[in-house]
Image (tube, rainbow, N blue to C red; front, side, top):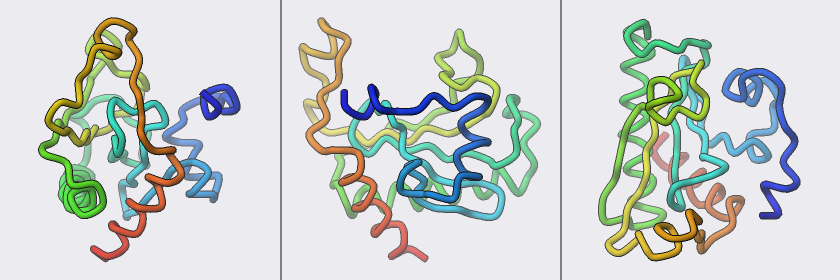
Length: 153
């Protein structure tokens, strides 16, 4: 709640604005590639929820350039390895939500979600209270994952 209540609302597209800020830790950016970057989800489905995002503002997956698609998928693989090293999940969900009706929170800028999963990670609070309990603060998770991703470089 402290993060949600203190977070500044960014006008425009967060995926376009956050990389321009230059403070990767404050904006939860874990890695910068040539055409895409990796960022933690500030409102994660599970601890370690990451997103791979092209720098270019584009809404349509089918219009991504070949180099964006290739780097997005290579970074997704790096993210999976980093998550395995740092958090030992039992599995992963990966996906792209295209359009608000499909669940896109930032519908004008395509991005790939990587959500680590653990046996038993869905509990009654999620179902009845529509609330997620995160056992670790975002900055702590950021530091772990940043180190794990740097080890891949």
